[in-house]
Each structure stands twice: as structure tokens, then as C-alpha cells.
Length: 282
Image (tube, rainbow, N blue to C red; front, top):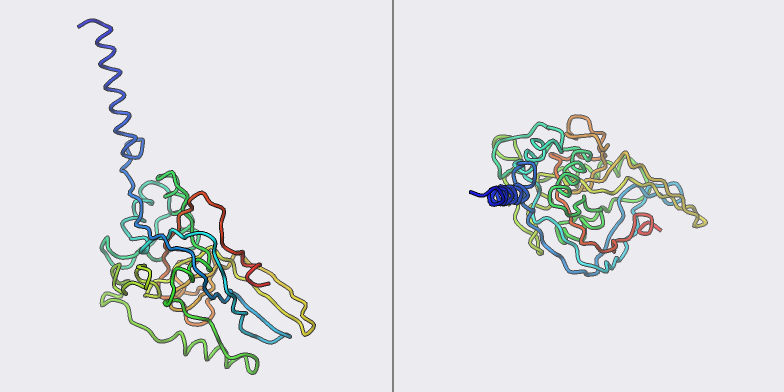
């Protein structure tokens, strides 16, 4: 065989191998599949900002706002599973964490906010798309009727507010027989098709804890603490970003979340239509 023909065959073989590796995700890594997404059309919805609100020095409910997003929201139809998170760990993109129960169909739990952000960054790199945690506003928008409005008795004895919070948050289904989170889909779908909202797994959001005070004259003071993040589920929870198990001392206000997991939203190259937390407060 002429040398030129041999070189041509070698070049063709190398090109074919290069294409094969590119299809598999590069460097011989297993191909990562995109998560199932639902695109929710924009609609007006009511939102009560997360955080601590005081009026004239007394605890009060945050104001209820009508928000009007300008664009659709692409969000995962279900929570990230244990199989998907293990893929990130084996690929070096996520720190290993203890999981409860076995089975690829269970949601990934025992995840801190930092773990969740690491997974979003890894998935974005592997799929060459932009994934991130939802804001609290986006989570409430997507949850629809599964979102619970955080309304408590105002003023008076602060202990009564604590008792009211515990009574409101204390009921709910128990975990599976093995003490692990139930398989994906166990808590059904909301009216938009999203699974397991307000189930036994609380989902991290990217929203920081905020404190807003309003004086008698209407003056406002706002402070945020991004070392504390909002997790959403059967009720709101405010947790340090490094906590993986809130029941083991996460400093949660009210009944601590049973499990901590995540679902992501995908950015589609448009400017975020969502109001910032400060805008929602003020």
C-alpha cells in the first residue's frame, strides 16, 4: 500500500476515534445525559419573601407581592437522583456524601448547598449548558399549589410564633420503611407536572437569608447573610450552606428538614426575568 494511502487511513482512523470520544464526553468519560426539564410559561403569582421581617421592632409577616416574570422557566421535572450525583463524584466534580438507602431511583440527599452548587457547575461543564439552583422566587413559582405560604401570628409573645411554626410544620408523611427517602415520583406531580415538590426532600435554593425592618416612620433596613441559604419543601428552612443533615444540628428555625437535595434550572441565554430579593422586599 502506498505511503500516502497508509497515512490517509491512519488520519481517518484518528478522526473516527476523536469523534467517538467527543460523543462520549471527551477523554474517554461516560456520556452524561441531560436531565428531564419542564418549561413553565410566564404567569403572575403571589410571593412572600423569605427571611425575617419586623415592623416597629416586632416580628411580622413579610409583605405578599404579586410578581410578573417576563420569561419562561426551564426547571428539572424531578430531583437529582443518587445515580446522577454518584456520576459527578466519580468524575471528580462533586465531594462524596453519605446517601440514605439504595437504588438509582431515589433522590440524592445529605447534600449541602455547596455540594449542590458543585453539581450544577459540573453538569454545566459536561453538557456545555448553564445550570444553577433556582432562586426562592423561582421555586415558589414552579411549586404552584405545593408551595406553602409562610404566615404566622404577628406581634405578641415570640414564643407563640415558635409554637405556631412547630405545629404547622410538624405534620406530614413519614419516610420509607427503611428510613431512607422514598423513590422519585412517590409524592406525585403538581399541576405543572413537577414531581415530589414538598415531599420528604427539601431542595436548596440560591437565595440568601435576609432581615428587613420597617420603623414606625416607614424607614427600612435590610441585611443579608449568604452563609445562610433558603431550602424549600413542606415549609421554608434557613440553613448554613455547609449543612448536609439539618436534623444533626443545622440550626434550623422550626422543624428541621428531613433530607436535603436539589433540582436545577437551566439558563437559556436570556437575562434573568426574576426580581432580586431586595426588589421583592422593598
